[in-house]
Amino acid sequence: MEVIGGPASYSLATKIAKKLNAKYVKANIHIFADGESKITISHKPRGKVIVVNSTYPPTDSNLIHTFSIIDKAKKSASSIVAIIPYLGYLRQDIAFLPGEVVTSKVIAESFSAVGTSQIITIDAHSEIALSYFKIPIKNVSAINKLAQYCKKLNLENPLVVAADFFWSANAKKFADILSTDSIAINKQRDPNTGKLHIISPKMTDLKGRDVIILDDMISTGMSIINATHLLKRQNCGKIYVCCSHGLLVNDAKRRIKNAGVEKIICTNTIPSTNSIVDVSDLLASAALSF
Ligand code: R5P
Image (cartoon, rainbow, N blue to C red):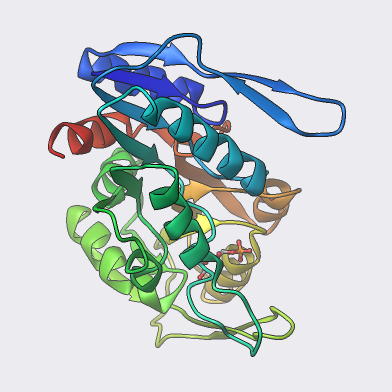
């Protein structure tokens, strides 16, 4: 077995290879002046090959790199397991407005077309999007890992708050690990403007209670900032934010901090200074059981 690390995930791929006791091979990249890229894999991969590359921004470039590595490796390997720690485009799972392309379906078909045998990802955004994949796909949860990290923070009577209703079951799971309770915010997004509308859940006074806001991903940070304002109005204690995928685009990190968040905790599906929860062992054991 060997692990090929793509440019978006060199560090995580190295960790996965170590955990699997597998050979690590780096896929080299050269970017031309016009923005096109050339990927080189300096030998012929054989047997079961694991390709690791996340598809965070620049998402389209990282997708092209991933497809190129798989396409090349498939020519000599017997099978390709693609570990895509953050699988982008899954929010585009239906046509919200007439004429919209369902891009997650295009991505699913492209993975098959380049010869992927199986896919492993973490906390995929949408079950509908996953249903478009015609190859086996394993969706691993990072909730336990994130909760174990927060358990060590010695929080004051913590309340777990799902930033979106669709993550309320995960918030409950997270809260159970901390032996506490959870609530969920109901968030609606205008399909034309993208503007968020927050429906507050029933809340008792949060005085003296620290809060953990939980979401699958943070992109612009607006969902977290809105949730923070809502919770601060209830006199809560310190606010922590936990997510699987910290996209944290533009100055999201600064704006979240300015809103009054104590700490942003993300897994290392996307590399950044906030990626403090390592999920390499989850991904390695998922690859072993395929
Ligand atoms: C959306 O449904 C997701 O679960 C996240 O809540 C969302 O993508 C976060 O985006 P932003 O940080 O831009 O509010």
